[in-house]
Image 1 (cartoon, rainbow, N blue to C red):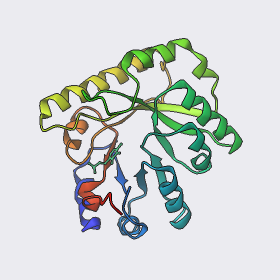
Image 2 (tube, helix red, strand yellow):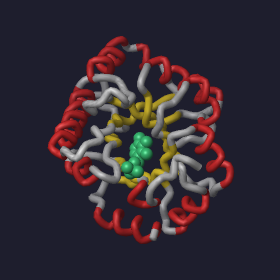
Image 3 (cartoon, protein in one colour):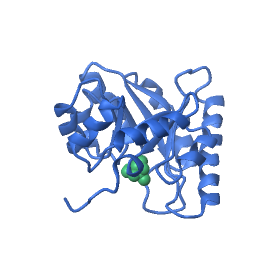
Image 4 (tube, rainbow, N blue to C red):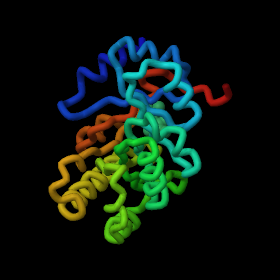
Length: 223
Ligand SMILES: *Cc1c(COP(=O)(O)O)cnc(C)c1O
């Protein structure tokens, strides 16, 4: 089932869109099933769980951190994480840079933008992000590479609303490309779209879709 779903999803993806299989709350065996089907990008939202899986599983897996990240835990993932999607402050970006330097790496990151009309989701507002970029000290952080933006749509059946949110993030990426990231070829990624809304996200320029439930089934939060 896992293998088939991955092949089905991949067969529909346009060029330039990559699938991140979100394996949080699912065991290493489920990850291996996806791995054996050729999947190499996996997403996790807890430091401890991701690190345990990293240690147990094949080393050519690219681990994408997609959850809220506390600064005191950055050190555990800095040696191996492929990309951090959830940078929501200069403070966190600075700590990722510090730990990346210690690990002798340059870490790819995305800035998480709050696009949902809900209070529970993390991320910067458009204006907070503009403010951080204008302030300018991020340019000194040479052990992180800002590759684009991440956002989550509102959890709702109203797909018109979700579509507006994705469109707003796509427009914001273009705004940033034309200002602070002029000539920076690496700044091009848009991480948006989950099980319920990924086709809409792709329509609006997503380059990373993050799919959990559709691949691995429902998560059991009581385990
Ligand atoms: C859990 C999670 C996903 C996957 O959600 P599904 O609806 O199961 O596809 C995607 N992105 C983030 C940030 C998540 O926390």
